[in-house]
Image (cartoon, rainbow, N blue to C red; front, side):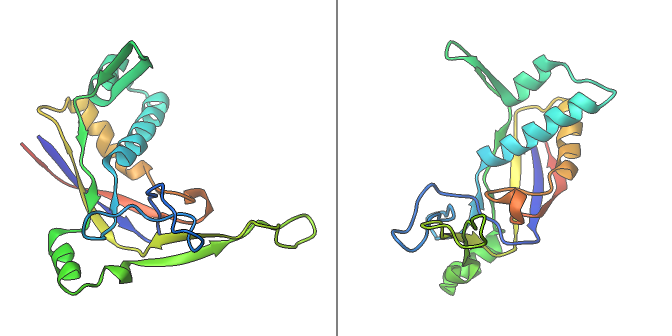
Length: 188
């Protein structure tokens, strides 16, 4: 079974690679082999799990923790961990767009650089605080959640979670990564 969805970004966004670009950029966007951006499946899993937990906590209809652990996996200790039934694929640009971008060598147009700096109490830039990060321009990516079978209660909350997530990526609390998750369809 597969749940397909899109993520439409309304602002620049940054899913980090953990890499820097020497003295020029402090944080690079994660990219695939064709230099195209994507949202890692583990990032999506974390966002949906967080939204799922919030919805389950404040909803009148509680979902059993065993069902949640079976779907998402759990970690209690190094000796007590379990892999979840759900597999979250990376969310990527649609295939036709990827092909056109690669064919026209246009991936460089998907990124730009933004800078920020810390301001001290006197309104002056703090020394050594200039920070530049690479961001991806607004676009829409497609993703999937795959499992042999998805419990009906879990599926409903996953779809509710899509409406709950409004931002993702680095600096999402500072204006980056405003987005909308949209359920597309379910394949059996």
